Amino acid sequence: MKSITVFCGSSFGSEEIYKEQAYWVGKTLAKENIRLIYGGANVGLMGAVADGTIQNGGKAIGVLPHFLQSKEIAHTNLTELILVETMHERKTKMNELSDGVVVLPGGYGTLEEFFEMITWAQLGLHKKPIAILNIDGFYDDLMKMVQTMVDKGFLKQINQEMLLVSDNIDELLEKMKNYQAPTVGKWISKEEI
Image (cartoon, rainbow, N blue to C red; front, side):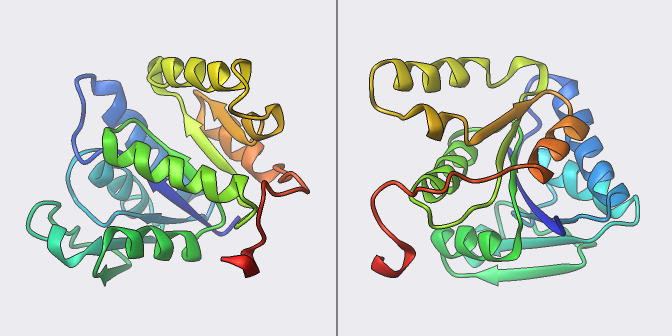
């Protein structure tokens, strides 16, 4: 894996551990010589993961829509900042540049990005690992909801198993490196889109 997209909050949240772990993720990516692809901002967990990468000799590429430049202030020390027009273009570009996705704590935007990427994987549009770093149990309730989707017949077990989860970034990266996507997509092929 040469590049990983990290989705996370543009705020720090209520617990110091979120910021500490975001920085540690960036530092770990730098140490592993894995390029960071992320939302391009210098605020919140987004800024912390970029700082962790940059301050430890890694490469960080930000993808930021023009209209967010004034709200999510662009990080000034990035290897590269790519400006796009729309949020969809942002996700598409981040997907094109990366070999997998790691999700850290965040709000609606983080969940929306995560669910779009895992849905694309479920549909067979890509075969990249999608992983959640479950810092301090932040995503425990989401994992329960995913289990409920399986239990109630809305999600297949094989699709639940596509989601990689750990509270340790080293373990999570190991799972991502060993990930094998399901051989059968859900309903459509990439050519049919």
